[in-house]
Length: 299
Image (cartoon, rainbow, N blue to C red):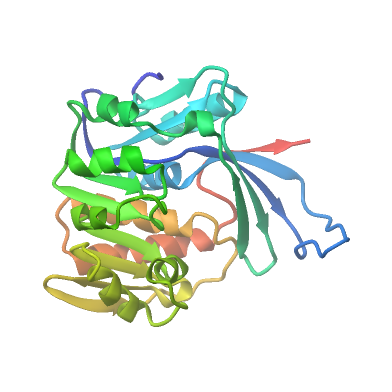
């Protein structure tokens, strides 16, 4: 386990999920069957949704901690170094001996769209014991959990509430009991994830948010890329438009949104105001190339 960058065990937001290395290449187009696409030099940077979200929260002045496992390899150490450099508390990032750190292969096309394939590392997936160990005595206003993690640690986290606000992200693991969504205070998904959960095609984000709320979460936020975001909660609903920005790279935009949103909610900012700030944070990200962690060019 790495040293902490924040004294004490009290933070604004705890992020529970995965950390990996992003292997990114910019391509003129995606490779066609039987053909090879020539791209830019490969870069390696610390990534993963929970990691990106934690760094976004820290960059916005919050005290953030990440609960995740990585391999005790070169990539794992690169990840912990990046987290420490960004001001994220790393005491709950475990370096697993003899395990390979997970990696995401990211192709970025000229229109800024990113195509991501995640190579998971089963040995670094969070367990129930990891959750108990990391959350025992942890003081935090909000916890964000990736719902696509194995169901056991997610169920443990949701059944043993450690924070006033529990935020769920991503399409739930197929083996996660659907009733667990009633334990989620805020569900945040993009349009495509919303459609997958509802088993329909992507449609109006506000309609999707209302439909998802019926599954149990008190508040639902559906992000819609350049169209901003829609939300519904017990006291109302609405949409927040996104500012027009040139699209350079969409990688990490949703994570910037969620990291900023979680921090504002932890600080008791009204939902609509928190979403507005988060939309602008996500829009700012797409106007810049690559994630917000240092990259290393691979020869």
